[in-house]
Amino acid sequence: YLGNTIDIHGGGQDLIFPHHENEIAQAEALTGEKFVKYWLHNGFITVSNEKMSKSLDNFFILRDILKKYSPEVVRFYLISTHYRSPLDFDDGKLEEAKKALRRIKTTCLLAEEFVENADVYLSLPVNGSHCLSERLASWRELLLKDGQICEKILSGRYPAEFPCLRRELSFEEYGLFVKKIDDLRGKFIEAMDDDFNTAKAIGFLFEIIRELNVFVAGGDRLGIASRLTAAAVLSLLRDLLGNILGLLENTSPATTDDKPEKLLNALSELGKRACGEKFFQISDAIRDLLRKNGVIGVIIEDTSDGSRLKYENPPDLDLLITEILKLRDNMKQNKNYQWADAVRQELLTNGIIIEDTKQGSRWKMID
Image (cartoon, rainbow, N blue to C red; front, side, top):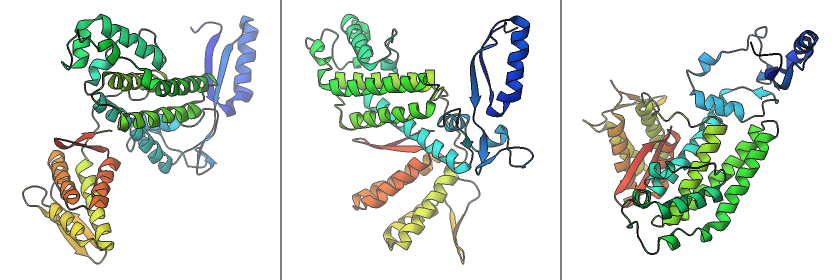
C-alpha cells in the first residue's frame, strides 16, 4: 500500500534493535530496494526521571491529560524538547508550557490592537514572500497600485490619492528592526532544518516575540508604515506558529466555565496578601467587592483555618470583570499603583488581558 520505500518511519529508540533492524532486513530482502529514507526515533518519556511503563505503574493516557490541559498546550510542551531527547513529564512543566503559550498569544493580541484593523492587513496576499523585508515590499507596492485596498487598509484615514502616500509607506527608519526579524526567522528555519530542532527554534521564536513587544510599545500608532510593519511581523509569526509548528490554529474562544471561580479565589488571595502586608484599605475594598449585593454577593466566612468563600452560583464573568476593573481604577486614582498592577497580573494569570485606553480599561480573553 505504501510502496517498496517509505519516506518517514517513526518509533521509540527502544525499537531500533531488534524490531526496526528486522523490518529493514525483511523488507529489503524481499524488494531489493531501500526500505526507509528517514528514521525518526523519539526519546523516552520519563516520569520523575523514571521511564514510563506499565510494569512500574507510572503511566497515564492522553485522554487524562486533556482533561486538565488543552491539546495546544500539550503540543507546545512536546515540541519544546527535541524529539530525540528524553521527555520528563510532570504537571509543573505543563504549567510552564501553558504560561509560555500565553505569552505568545498576548503578544499577538497586543500587536493586533496596535495595528487596529488587523484582519484587513492579514488578508493581504503574501505571494511567496517568506521574509519580512520581502513581505513589506510586496504590500507597499500593492497599496500604491490598488486604491481600493489602500482605502480599506487606511480605514478612511487618508484618501487613496494621498500625495505623500509613497513617502508614508517608507520603511527606512525600521530597517534595523526588519533586519533583526529576518535574521531571527532565518535562524528559526535553520534550527528546523537541523533534524527538526523545535526546542532551539522556539528560542528564536521568543526572540521575535520580544522584538515585536518592544516595537509595539514604542511604535507610532498613527503611522502607516509602523502599523504595516507590525502587521507583517504578525503575519510572519502566524506562518511560523501555524504552518510550521501547528500552533494557534484553533481560534475558537476558550471555555470560561471556571473563570469566575478562579478569579474569585485570586481576589480572595490578593485580599489576604494586602491584609498581611497591612494594606487594610486594599483588603477592605476587595472584601467589599466580593460581598457586593446584587452583583457578586459572595459570603466570606472567617474560620480558624482562614477565610473561605461561599456562593450558590458563581457570578457572570462580564459582570465580575467589570467590577474588578472599577476596583483597579479606584486603586490607581488613590495612587495604589502596586495593587492596581497586582490586580492586572492576577487577571493575566487567569488568561485575561487588560488594556488601558483613553476611553477607559477594556479586557480580552487570551486563551
